[in-house]
Image 1 (spheres, rainbow, N blue to C red):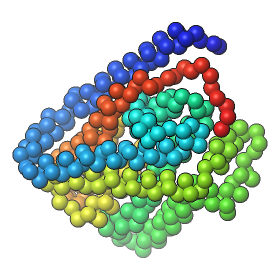
Image 2: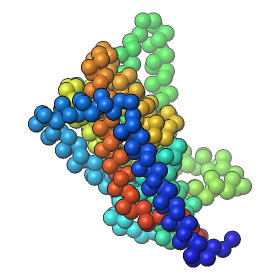
Image 3: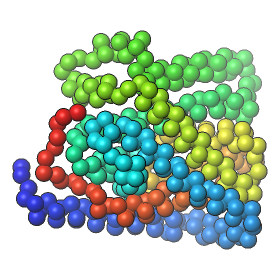
Image 4: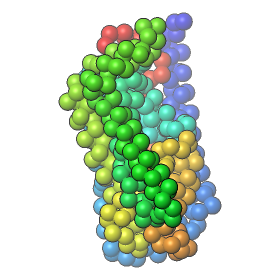
Length: 340
């Protein structure tokens, strides 16, 4: 069905207004209307009196643009296969996606917000490339969680029976095998892809389209995508570590990295929307990181404050910045190119 230019413009404008209104409302509900806000406000206000806290807070804030610039670089590497965009435009699209993701399940709006800012590229193929970038970040999160689990289980759970030790060894072997398999599939290792493609039937159009799109990406590009995802992971986990220290929770770095990796590992497996994300993130963080402090109330409060602040810096602020680029969203276009 063809839509005239005036109606198309009206529908696009209305959609943008709705997204901005919902994003602002969700941020308000999450940060200011939360039951834990008063507690966070008090601890944050007390901590501001410390020069060390201010220094760490500034460093965490400065790392936020770098974090999302790396994500923009990843997306640019992938999307340039079908539309040439600058790093600046890629970063604007990423911020727009964050704004859109606040009220969508599992942040699916993140990649929808990005592809709807593209001017020429086919949206289905753009979505497939964007999903490939998200998968790379998920792979890094899962890999880090698996490595963390190697050390976490013996240290915090232990083995009272011999069979538990065997169960642990079996679990680690399975997880390492699955992790290696997923990475090899992502990098299109010949020994894996040849067998996988044989299983894909010609009538499975969507899967075949994904294979066609991904096959166009050079393996070197996929390796670079994984490296950028790893660097991003080190940055946002480092931000969390800095904020834990800023709130007075001094944990050895590798110990903290293990517990933070377990937190992100479990978070990756929990279906959620960003509205519930902060509450779930806080609960999971308190569970794992709190183990180091034997679950004391003071440590739980500090962990919750650090979790709230990292969410605000890494999601709420970029979402507000994304509002300034929401005008780039175009849900209805004149045409839909089909060339890859």
